[in-house]
Amino acid sequence: MNDIIFIYYSLKSRWLNCSLSIFLTAFGVAIALLINQFEHTFSKRLSKDGSGIDLVIGAKGSPLQLILSTIYHVDIPPGNIPFNEAKKIINHPQIEYAIPLALGDNWKGHRIVGTSLNYLEHYNSKLEEGSVWKNDFEVVVGSSVNLNLDQEFEGAHGLFEGGDFHGDRKYKVVGKIKQTGSVIDRLIITSVDSVLSIHGLDSLNENDSHLNPIKHSDKDEDNKSHHKHTKNNHNHEHHQNGESHSKHSEEINQHKHFGDKKKNNVNLKDDDHDDHSEEHAHEHTNNPPEITAFLVTTKSPIANINLPRFVNKETSFQAANPAVEITRLTSMLGMGSKSFAILSIILILMATLSIFAGLAANLENRMGDLATLRALGYTKNRVFRIIIFEGITIIILGLILGLLFGITIFEIINNVITPLNIIQESFNLTNDLIFIVVIVFIAGIAAALFPAIKASQISVANQLSRNI
Image (cartoon, rainbow, N blue to C red; front, side, top):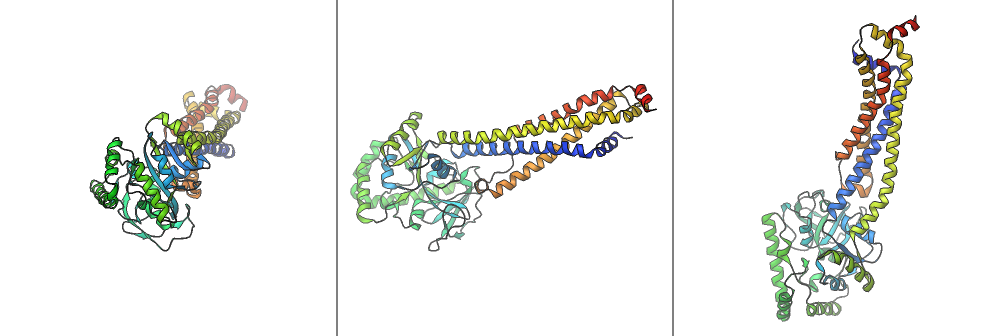
């Protein structure tokens, strides 16, 4: 009889015990796969999305909520902050540059983010088609957003799908970004003024002509002298800056990438200009501009410690450190993942013991059959291989079923749970997952090893004499 056919009928004769071993293996592997995939997804996204952002300055509240809502865009921000007051903090000499964010709307779950071109530069974004925005209500969309070039759409109130639409104004897509593997892939990005305007707030251009981008130059004194010299020609300067910004946007489009940050440094440390802007805002506006937060990159690690203390103690805002808050988050999630990992190990051990018990318990009943096979010419090694391959067959079926279960459940969870759905992460074959599969496979062989050795050492004469 062919060995494969023999193994098939042997497993079929004890299908209940074999099924239990297969399903225990499958459940253990599925849980291990889910833990591995979610840990890989979160660690990769947390690292890439938060890269280069040292602090987030926003409204007081939960610092973790501020980080999740402004960097990862999976939560609701604690509130807004007055732009003119926050700008004073951004002028701190220990801050390298700051990126403004204005949130509040979405399109089919994709958040509409008002910001500066510096936000695109930060994530090394490259245009797949079109150009960056030049006017209000022009947007650039991430690779995962199902919008086409020149398409118009209405934004909906709120940061999650289901809010009321702003029917009075429509956005127009002028550019699409190549996939970056970061949070920017699922965002709709426009100017800050677009978001402020649609919510009835005053434009930042009324108060500051140097919004895009907000950076500190290394030549602060030269820039300050230049601002003071041109103070009386503010309107002319504003016009020149607008032309410069347009030319800069066209140059970006031609080269299909966003230029070096150092080329666009702007100094906002002109106290006279800031005072003039604030007075102008108070005298001529009723709805001064508010933004959600600033993403800040500091000049030194020491600033990451000193600035939050200063902001949290001396101002009405808060400064949250992403590294600290994400460490807290991962420590909380780590306890849950460890619990599931322990459950996975227990299930795999139970499956291994089940394979061992099934083969060992059945061995006594099969001694006569094995002795007959030996009498017919089967060698010890051949009998050993048959028992080993029975264990390997069970463990392989369990692995295949477990991987199918795990991948299917992972995809379902990704589509059903909103925070995971908007991350849009797919299954990844990681080194840890390969290690798990190898360990389970070795465990299955080890479980079949003892019964196989015992079966190969059977005494043919003694066993056949018993059966007579």
